[in-house]
Amino acid sequence: MDNVLGFRSNTFSQKMGLLCVFIGVICLTSRVTGQSYNVYNALYHFPSGSGMGLYVAVAWPLTDINIDVFGAVFLEAYYSLPFNDTQLQYPPVVSDRSLGRRSVYESLISKFDAKGYPGKACLLRSICEAASYSMQHFNGVLGDLFHILLTPSTSSDSKEDYFLEYWQAEETGTNTQNCESYNACRINLLDLMSFIK
Image (cartoon, rainbow, N blue to C red; front, side):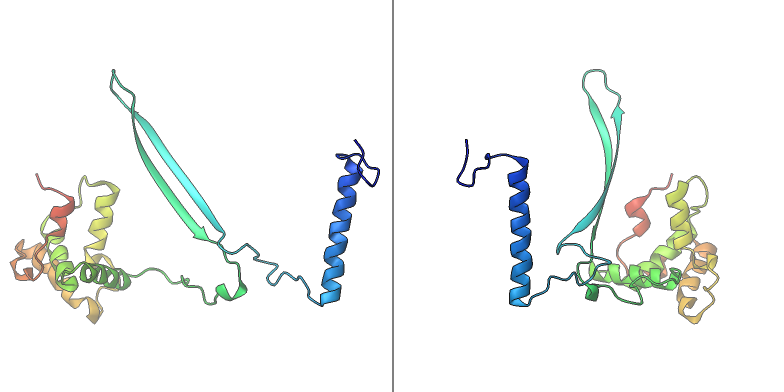
């Protein structure tokens, strides 16, 4: 079936001709109106609202003869991509300095405060209780991390004046195994995540 111009309706030459006409109209329009279509940030050019995600899932079968049941762990990380040069900043939000014990303790205190608990008192009580119970053996990686976190004497910067109260809480727990002096916090952090046999 032929159309008015004499081309077949679905030929390659017709499609290429329409594409050339379309590109020509765009170029002519930009010259007539004086507008330019430049990419403002050629290095990081993503459409507004773009993102990049990483998804990791691990599943394992649970043993049962009658039914198929799987346990699974799923991790999702989503990062927004910059669509504008003004979103990039220097120095970056995360600097090259290492994460210190002081910033970790201040972060924990602010999290306790945000939940309505006295932050510093709860951290002092947690340090005292962690020192009064041995968490060094048979606790795995998570237990080792909590032991390092709640033992200020394991850090080289723990002799600063800022850490004096935390160091005294650790000494109290190690020497007396009695943390009654830190009763301003009504929760026991270690009871929430562990038990002692």
